[in-house]
Image (cartoon, rainbow, N blue to C red; front, side, top):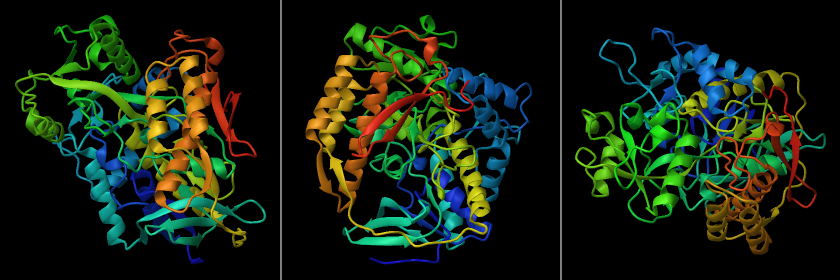
Length: 527
């Protein structure tokens, strides 16, 4: 075991929330180390295409209140209204700080930031970079700032367990390096910024790193998670035949610029589904595509962007992915299907990133702040990472004043239930995607339960597979308990929204045996 008693804060994850927190904490005088299990830029942030949804006050008629209203509408009645208003109000300042750190957003013809519109938004308010490479630019700017500041970046180290002292407060983090050698980092504060759990599914927009590690760490540390059943499926992922793993995203901004969805007969089907048609919220569009595929027997629908001018210049990432698949989006519609995209729920935190365990914080997709509710409004995710990453850094600085620091208790290799990843992904894709029912959820739970074997985790793959196993069990449990359809959670055996669930978030904790247990609470601020 190796020990480092010099850090004030360990940040787990190097995406937008993690690096924002690390940079802000360092500016506040804290000693910070960033731990990431892969390369520093290998997380989900770099793959975000659309942009950052933010009202900076230079577009006539658009207001923060309108952004709040759109977010609440998309969230299906489960957003925390106070959280939504608070986080979105801090958006302009967060984007200004990011630009001060070197991020370059696309300019419009009038010299102001260029804007686009995405599903669920009532205005053109999404700022973007590199056309459709916003996440890559945000990641570049933050990694450059971290490198320039010489922040300690511990790459190729996977977090195994949050360590606690005799009082129950955080005392550090146990890790494994790329060769499986164990180590311990001692610090009185740990911030989880590990992203989501798209790798629960066979087809996803998420990179291979998105295995739910942070939520699993928090659950084992005694913190609750909430809203895990609300897994957002992006409506438009490039379809080039049956495939698994990370699939190329076709950003919603393509529809925001005027592209429309067609079924195999060339008919626009979204006009009959929602007043916003092709720009309806993501859960609505993804569900409509799924119904269309089932009704027509087709493997994909089509996104017709042929009327858009300058497609290759405006959407270079999408254009390149299409051309690599032998598709010319300028001359033919793009074949698309839904794929697992974003976790609307996560570790329960307040609006500063604090959890119920002293010294443990969470920010970004890993956290459940109440911003997203039952369905995330497009491009609110990067904004949340910027705002909550900064807030969490300030919370750590405040909480560490006068706190006694103790070393962690005994450290060993945890024994965790691990099911083979392929078994988990097949079961979740079959039963817990868009359209769920009690029989399928129960069958998937039985499959994963039978395949899960307790064993010591001694490498990155073991840590990831253990996280996916407990997340799968948790998602199946809460999806089975929510007997209604709301937002991203669609029950074919309970197709209607039920007002009894209007204020209810499904909360998960681990029992003494490490199994997920569901309890239904009306969380503070639910609206």
